[in-house]
Image (cartoon, rainbow, N blue to C red):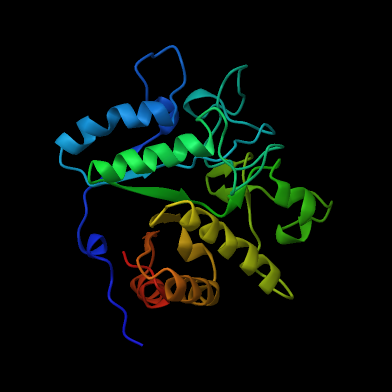
Length: 242
């Protein structure tokens, strides 16, 4: 089968924003409505992709503070990449940003301005993510039974649990992660910036992206990967457009 990348995969100008930083009142957290207010400026600067950092609920446990402090003060929002809390995980919007209807309004307003919205997708979890409660086997455990947090020495991320793809039967995990993409595609997202895909198995990406692209051929996947050329080539063959 021959497939052709969507035109926007060939060339696009991306503008990255943290939605909670958008708004006219610096004393109040930004929302999707604040993002809509920014669209004319972003359009005038010549950008045609609005890249949103994670918009999901943020964990409370081991939440980081301002400027990466290991201790969060009351009111500190935490890292947007520490995904999930009692409200939900990767299929839930952080209510501080707005509702699903507000998100749909942002997509509509962006497309009316000739801008496509890209969503950050990081397959990792805060200690409060529903996956941790419902599927503890999807994470790496220490001998004492506690779950290993993410490390990229010398950095340690106590607020993030990486997912363990080394499963006796990987399909339940794979299907769940694929369903995250499907959920957001069905809610209007056509571009994903995938966080660190080179740290996940190529077999997973081959399986996941091939099935998604058969059903949603106009979807674009950008690999945020800084790694060896051979692995970059493998990600491209697996279905990443960029």
